[in-house]
Figure (cartoon, rainbow, N blue to C red):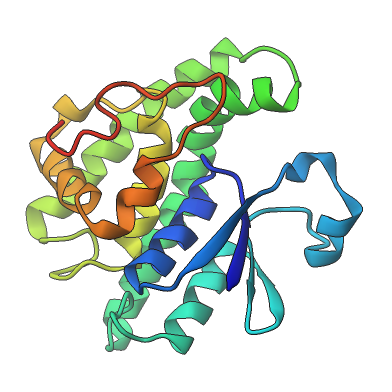
Length: 221
């Protein structure tokens, strides 16, 4: 069986998990405390980051590269459009969430509230938390604008862009840091993607010391 070395609340790991699950590729999940820099893990990925996917006898790293590799090896159901313009837009939005959203929001909220405690690196920086809480509003508004013009974030069908966004938002939702009342369009989009079978494993995640809110796994939130 394929094996994924991951951290439950990592949005990058979640994006890969969602892609694999949507394509019905079974994978064994192995929780990896990557910050401890275990020599065995560093042999799998010298960059010392998760996710790392063991597939077809090789170790694959970097979430975007992993997702595109899986897409090429298992093209159905497709998570990237066939046309160049559509693929560009998906890649642009994946980069938006994995770069801009991650830097401005995820790292300021999730990493401060959860990762610091798990890694033993001190208490949350209140300035970062305030900055993240402010920035997430801008990103939700941008998503609302996209969804006013499209059925899904990148177009008329669900793509990897939706999984990238949902990976980050679901991680934040685990710690109640998403105001779903800000946009009906974004809430409806998340309800649709949250109801997919591929999301079941994500909704079952439990992080010791950080119980999820009651609405986290509720499909009718």
